[in-house]
Length: 462
Ligand SMILES: Cc1cc2nc3c(=O)[nH]c(=O)nc-3n(C[C@H](O)[C@H](O)[C@H](O)COP(=O)(O)OP(=O)(O)OC[C@H]3O[C@@H](n4cnc5c(N)ncnc54)[C@H](O)[C@@H]3O)c2cc1C
Image 1 (cartoon, protein in one colour):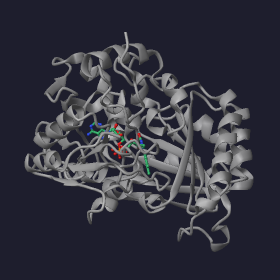
Image 2 (cartoon, helix red, strand yellow):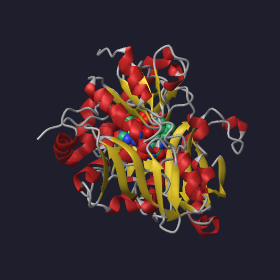
Image 3 (cartoon, helix red, strand yellow):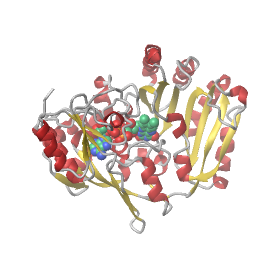
Image 4 (spheres, protein in one colour):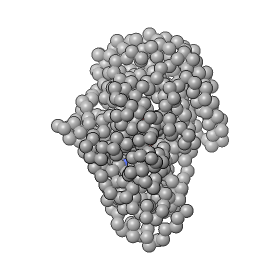
């Protein structure tokens, strides 16, 4: 560990609009809490930045003092890369402003904003950009890894809608990057994660969405899982880009539209979304209903911002979480059988296996158009193991790992970097795919000493 003197820290603090939090100070323990309660790291200091000047000061300080550096956006990364033991954390949680220019269909979003911040500001004008499915997630980490959600089939990934970014690189310079300025850097940050610097502002293209959209759940008994999932596969593989349906296998939460007898038992839930009004997608919903005999259904018209927050109550901290993920280009019958076998043996009340649907506009780009490469993947499957007590760690981790292994022969071979765990360093090449080599070259140009390495790390190389 590098030790830094009190006077040097005081000097850093005087140079900031924000604040430095040190171990023992009142806000320090709160500031080192992140979404995944499995992560318990103790940084030497947390620099709460108030703007780009503070970010530059913090980058320079960590580099000049040889302190390991981590960057915290929304603090949701499962691997806990937002924190570093004994190092310096650049905490962007105060940098959440969102400026919308409705006539230009653009939003400028600060690096620590959450999805909720963007939806709130953009929906004031009936606009939105594709982000994720949980409103407390950070725009920063989500976007830099790719970013997919309910609007992805219609409008692509978050990175497909990124127009420019302002980024503080390892030497402390702040660069504006877009398709014409530092185009290699712009290519790399669209899928290369936090490897290239701290993004202080993202500029996104916006689209007319809502404010009313169609969304909800159709829930089937677990006994019908095989036939429901086979029909689901056939349905989504020919699906209109205006519709997205994700499949989730888990124990039913006590949702009011489900009979009490179903609560706590395994179910297959299909989450349906369309930006179209409900009367235009009634036929598509009726088709879902025909997959079996639903035990409950709640699909209808609702405000887009409400839909964007609808799964938040299932994802609140603190809980212990462990993920394993595979991309699938298609779902074979054998893959479905493995999913069902493990979903029938969930290790905790809150664990689930979900199939997030890609395709549509997300799959219209070439794999080398930008760093995010998985343009053939139709499903991002995530084994989301979630529990409360440390005593259950071993059981939950073992279940996730065994399922992951059993599903591997049926998967496409890629993985979304934002779903990688701490212990999956050996899957980084798989996550960056054919773009890994170019990413290493760009890393060598912008961060030759690998200052930004608390992430799904790309080592600088030829
Ligand atoms: C409940 C939940 C739901 C999710 N749903 C989705 C989903 O629907 N779609 C999807 O695509 N992903 C989803 N994810 C995954 C999510 O994209 C990643 O966890 C992502 O890393 C979160 O970003 P963050 O800023 O919140 O995380 P943090 O942990 O704060 O950041 C993760 C890493 O991103 C980098 N980073 C963050 N902000 C910046 C910045 N401004 N500049 C430079 N680097 C930065 C840093 O390297 C940091 O270590 C979900 C995650 C959770 C926990």
